[in-house]
Length: 315
Image (tube, rainbow, N blue to C red; front, side, top):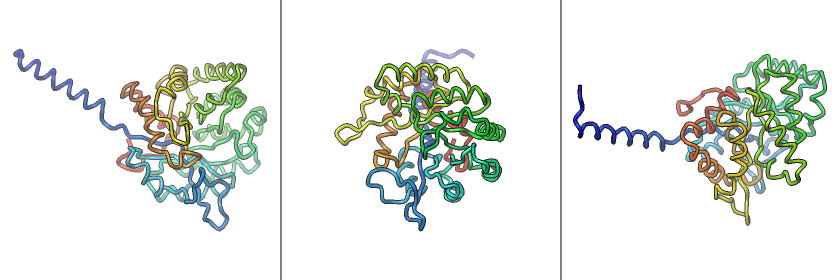
């Protein structure tokens, strides 16, 4: 069958409109870094969020802020070193399908680690643990400890994620060593943009760059683009040009398959600036195209966390 000129150009125009529509359709977001806590409990909470935060951080509160922004699911990152709060976190997540998983707090070097790991990993919402520069833990010191490594290997065997906390140059070096010793372990490094901003001297920058280049070669290493937003004169800076050099550095190093979104709500200024945090990274990643945006905002987090699909709105 042959097409006349009018039909041909009509179909071409329709195709272009369809493509434009597809490129501008909303991309669902999975927020891989929020904290849940309730400081009003009888025992209180060891962490209570950003400046001026007096309300418990619970899924219903977060959902009211997040849903209008296109956030359809979230992963809670531990906000307590208390072992019993692993159970509290899982229980509070169970009641709200917005929550697609939790990263708990267990110490692989402790004698009770195997028992707790066996207990918690059976819960589909328990996705892994966080360990790094927080609660006086030190990955730098533990990466040479054979007992710690045995615990981490048990995690890898049950397919859980190892997430680091608050990176520094020496922590990145420790992640390289951990990956060498447990090569099949999925590892995610949080808050990397904040670390890049803090690296003021040439020695720190050179160390970070060497580790980043090595980590970028490894298939099971993921980077959380969180703690991105900067506050200038007590207001969030929204010009994507301010953030572009650091984001370009990470995108060029790791490509579009290794970066994931996290807001860090309600930590620090994130407690009242969730829309600004989302806008900054949307402006940057949408310029990279729909495929890259989808990977950053939800697809890569599926590969990194293996989170649980709990609601029809979640991709």
